[in-house]
Amino acid sequence: MSNKIFVDACLGKETPYTPVWMMRQAGRYLPEYMAVRAEAGNFLNLCHDPEKAAEVTLQPLDIVGVDAAILFSDILVIPDEMGMDLEFIKGFGPKFNDPLQSQEDLDRLIGGSEAASKLTYVYETIELLREQLDARGDNKALIGFTGAPWTLATYMIEGQGTKTYNICKKMMYSNPKLLHNILAKVTEVIKLYMEKQIESGIDVVQIFDSWAAAIEPSKYDEFSWKYMVEIADYLKSKYPDTPIIMFPKGIPSFLDEVYGNFDVFGVDWSTPMADAKEKLGDKYVLQGNMEPCRLYSQEATKECVESLAETMKDGRHIFNLGHGILPDVPVENAKYFVKLCQEASKRK
Ligand code: CP3
Image (cartoon, rainbow, N blue to C red; front, top):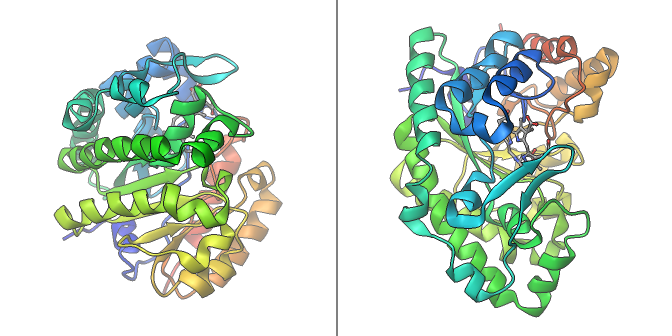
């Protein structure tokens, strides 16, 4: 039985207040993060160093007061360990030098349990965090995560971030079989990876489909959602008590079609919370969804938190941003947001 309010909230139980965390909460807006990253040398070294990764995971709990920690890592460690050789280039972002172009390219990648068992540094980070969180005794939860197969595939096929997704969309429409083979291979690794994260000690799973909006609505289920649901089904069959959060970013027109065995639906900032509540609120707990740039202004933050608290006053809610916090947000404003969420939702 859990006594973590974040876990309870994910399961739709009543909690003393609505818990809050922020996507990308461990990151560059925190000077303390920048100091540890500098010690590690670069971002990937930091991901590979369990002690330092655990340290930055916990920073937002102490500095901004959030109710849950999210494992410090990156979604792209999966393709990296499948054999794609990830680099993070300063001022540019992630890069894979040999993007997938053919079935032969895909066949060269390591799959299944062989790939999942190479991510030992992630499991070690989680084990350290489990010990440290239990020792703190403040019942804050630990969120583990993965990218959705589609979001990972966009980087594996394009080799980098993209605005147009033209290379993966060319594959979607002219060679859908290859795209499905890529998605299926990544899905198998993710199932085992998330299973190992749960075995290592995470409390909650979040699946980030950050680039969901790149897919036209009539193709979204086929190329993304059904793979996310397959992962959720697999995890729920083995770990029915571990909550799963699905975060598909930017697909308001898909709300009517959402299905699957998971607990929390992450609402992005382009979707009005009242719409999400009307369509999904009885079935799923809702997470979100302040536009992250409101964090530049305390007044804009307050207006939004009060409105969200009112819309979600009956509960079944977790406060969050509608996407990740940006590097130039003042720490004071992040603290202000967290405190306001906790106070605005206090139940007597
Ligand atoms: O605090 C947390 O949320 C946990 C850590 C986390 C990171 N990345 C750390 C990170 C998580 C959950 C992610 C997920 C991630 N990574 C996503 C999905 C979430 C989202 O925001 O949509 C995506 C698309 C990525 C891929 C990725 N990683 C990109 C495109 C970049 C470069 C862009 C950027 O922000 O610099 C990264 C790097 C990255 N991942 C950083 C951090 C803290 C910045 C690296 C640095 O310190 O310079």
